[in-house]
Image 1 (cartoon, rainbow, N blue to C red):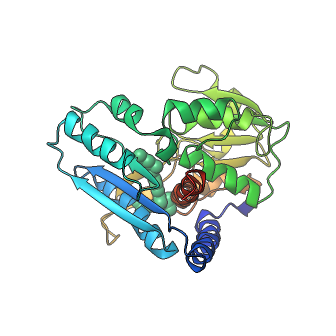
Image 2 (tube, rainbow, N blue to C red):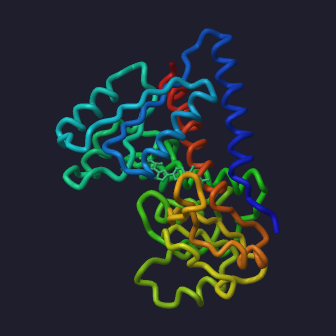
Length: 292
Ligand SMILES: Nc1nc(=O)c2c([nH]1)NC[C@@H]1CN(c3ccc(C(=O)N[C@@H](CCC(=O)O)C(=O)O)cc3)C=[N+]21
């Protein structure tokens, strides 16, 4: 069994990005600038946005954080998005999800200039992904593809079962794994809350991608010997023994499943850190595409 180590892999990629920044500096070229918009004080969002800003600092990217009150109106947030769309200094930006209930996430996502949409959530970028045209891939799926690549995991002709059909993970991942490319060329089954024979399908899977957010959902009796497992679940459970007061658990019962798996991502330290580094890679790409 081999661990797909997102922490180490993301560290190596951050090093590569830092070198790219140095090379640009030496030539007097622009430094990539990522902006993040955070609305309100959701605990998870504060952690993730903080990690994104820290990663920028470490790599040498410029970053801006716009932390707005959760009483902000939809129009005010749209105005912020338009401002960032038109700011030549900003190469790419994200609006951290989830947004407060009185704001329509779809409306906000649609307002982001696809050329600056480093999250890859805009329909233009999702459409380009489906057609295998250049564009930004959603950060979490892109991070998973990078892990497959860097560990040379064979995906061609494999049966890949995806659990969960969210717009940001399950759905795009099911499309990417089926594309005519590497990683890809898998036979894909996309499963969700209405799937009837999930266990039967999982027992046929060579690759399982779990993105439902249910702690310890996937157990050893549901997988076959040699399976490749990517755990995208992130749930915070209260834990008084931790300094933070909580611990992070994935969808996979790591202890039992890792005994049968050929490759497996841990949580934390698997897909999460890869998501952040994908965002950085997308930001560098945004700057290059917009030729600054
Ligand atoms: N516009 C937008 N873009 C996103 O990319 C986005 C979002 N909204 N909303 C929420 C999800 C979730 N997400 C994570 C990023 C990093 C970790 C991560 O680094 N996790 C660490 C643990 C971090 C911790 O201690 O909480 C790990 O797995 O090792 C997890 C989850 C990005 N998301």
